[in-house]
Length: 110
Image (cartoon, rainbow, N blue to C red; front, side):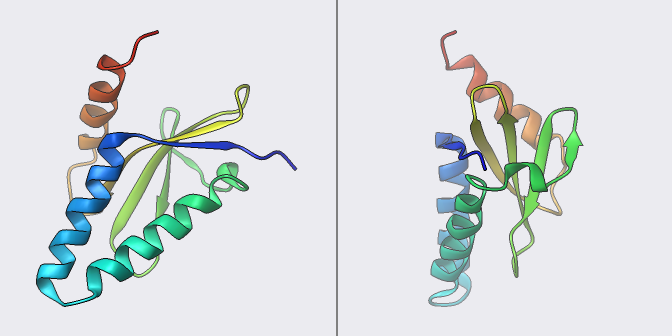
């Protein structure tokens, strides 16, 4: 079984932190539960990134259990990497992930 390297973009980390803060404002401790669940599930991508279907061209999504958020990621099977670039609420316009992905690509050299 292949082990993939997990790369979490700064934008995705910010998504998780913003959501954690919002949930904590709603109910004490809820943000911590969200963050723990999100990190736990994201870490499973190291072992099973191909278990999720492609949703947009090459972008795969994973629903965070008990929370209405999708983790958006790309698998590079040749480099054995999983890049998580967004964590977005399911009610938001799905085009938001494109903006986040483009923003991440503009900042990288290549």
